[in-house]
Image (cartoon, rainbow, N blue to C red; front, side):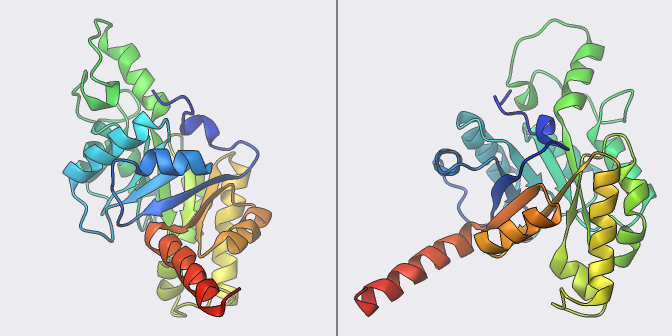
Length: 259
């Protein structure tokens, strides 16, 4: 398993900083991010063309770098959740979780008996292809203990149910999907609107109350620091596309200005 276990970081002090991978699923990406000080990375399947063959590769790249990898799956479908975990991902991020019923179904799909009904196939990528002779039950417990579940709060229903969702065993983190939340509230991009702020506060308070983590994506490092001060302990500094654009754009401006 990775030296730094993702689930062991949940609910702990200090800010964990990572980024999203939307484009650069390259062999060196895990080691590049690790060398830069990343605590985690999120591989996005929801808004990209990435399929499970790509997920399998990026999991291996990040395992080689001992960098915890979260896969944001494209839906709440059972096969998306369990397949991502079977590739060896340290956790899954699941979009638009609006109720306790949905959260329970996600936990059920992600956890082995007795915590869920995840289909059994051991000795594969999530066990690092190890040849093992132990009984099934302790191996189930081992995988249940390392599997991290991040549920996205992206509408008013999810925010209203945040306390009950965060209270559930197996749920490790609430991640605020700020853009979708603002759209669902009828105020696209109005992140200072009272309805948005109320939903955000409910999400943060639910995570804090139940000893779970809270996460959010920032547009840049400065905003990430603001989120950390607000109580988010998992912060993504933008994503690979925007980080490259920001750095290169700044470089272009510097060269052309002669300063």
